[in-house]
Figure (cartoon, rainbow, N blue to C red):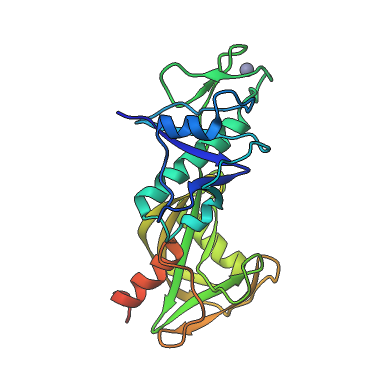
Length: 260
Ligand SMILES: [Zn+2]
């Protein structure tokens, strides 16, 4: 299989600025971007199915015709499959940069000969890419859905609730805890929707629906700055359809399968 190079610089995606969507590069184009004589340091994560991640040095000048774009901009711009590959390449790069040294004994790590792992020659520990599971949940009741604005969101964007799963928790327990911590509501009838890798830098979002059971919305004001019940015909600005949050909301509105 032909090798495909996913090139990053300063945590951003390198792309041809005359292309409709950012595609990976072949060997020839990689060479023309990096320049064989250039002193830049190039790091390659282990190859898998032809996907190779490359990071250009911060000060490496990009040739004319190329630009940088944040990975997040590819959501809804590139299709899911292409976004998934750039996301995977980005996660591998983050993992590589975080595991150059062994977390147990501090020795420099080396590529594993056959697996996607870094090996420590000092203590023989293997270091695999870490993925953090998160829950993301749409809470509904009758013809209303619960939407909240995270304090870190751009103003006006309202979304579903989300949070990391803690050690020892099931996804369902994490979901109930997060909902109670963020808005002090209880839910029932939890059901799974779908998942989405979220490479910022390495989450796996597990999407759920949950029916409101009891309580009054009461926000903490730290993580969540505003939250409320919204009817289907009067929605605030919601996340794009490229995100699992946007898909949870749209799926619920289109199907209303949970409506009583
Ligand atoms: Zn070690």
